[in-house]
Length: 303
Image (cartoon, rainbow, N blue to C red; front, side, top):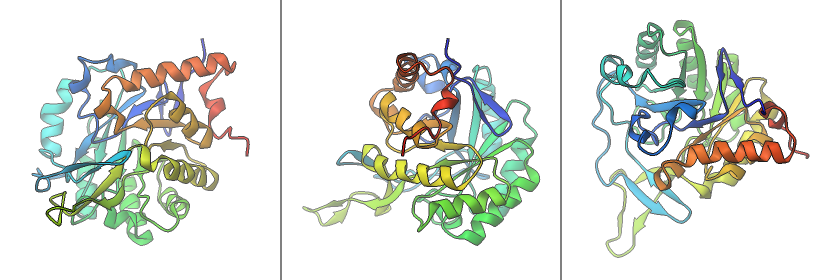
């Protein structure tokens, strides 16, 4: 049997297939469609310090080869996550990794501190790249100074594995990766969605309630793949790649470009069992190419 295990900071995943925050709920929503325990990790829906109602509707719009969303981090807050959500999902035999958000650096610090006290969670994904909130989010991730400050502040209070989710809406994503690694990140995940918009030509009005939103799906894959390659060459920490992964071949391309693990996002809306199919496809590829360990694929692009 091929070795599928990968290490992300201080944690070991049974395989490199994980699910992207915001597209997989808390994992329990998918148990009717697949065995969630087969995943390497679940990156759960974004959480904030206080409850958030999210953005005005409409929040989603289909585009050519992708979709726009502007959900706006709707959630009931970190205390509800710890008291109500986590007891329902902590039995899963996989890593539960919360996606941590904030409007201020103090928000990030408080949420991370609360999670630090939870024994069942060994890693967080620090989201400094959400394009769908007016305060915080992408505002931190596109500014080198605030990206460093937010990451450093959380690193000082959070003792587990710190994964920082990067925004593609920057001039040089490799430079941003270097900054957050210098600030203490154990790994980086990329890319979050690209800022975009959709217009109804008949009404001459924007389709999304917030006018702009985050573009995801197959349309962003070539750019996301290039950014993973750039970051892989720039930093020495694990890279978790995402952006338009729809099948096993897509996932393998991200591994070859430098990803240690991958996240599946938009594809979950089309096929809720896609992550297991991707895992099986990676296993088949490894057998066919006589690859003994999945880590041998990371950065193995012949360029």
